Image 1: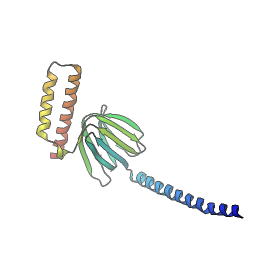
Image 2: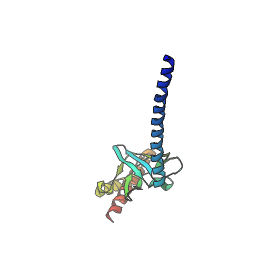
Image 3: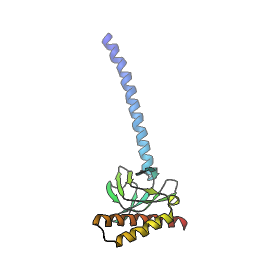
Image 4: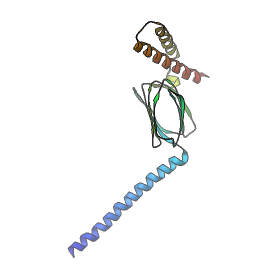
Length: 173
């Protein structure tokens, strides 16, 4: 009789655990279904100085060595390099966002995008005069006799300055 009461006491506890697990699975399924139907993906942009953006996005266009790459929801998993240039993305509320980004990496996996970049700046945060001065200094550095490493550093500096100017000019138009 004592063994029988222990058995009957564990059955309701197991059923309670099963019901909780089913509830959690249903919540996760609803969340995934919502994301699939709305064609959204999670986007995290992390710059060296800290988080730049974290939230949902419908689409994004990133600068890669092969050119601008558009990424929509349900894209196959990829890893790609990011080069200095203009990043654009649209959030679920329909708002378009843009930023000047420097070199980094992009990972798309399971409808989630992670971007790691050296820097990311909104157009309103860019000092156009400083960017123009940096571009001029980089152009001058490219004309000087220097090591291959210094030459590549000047190229990167020039690319970043030009990207910053393009993003800033796009905001003012």
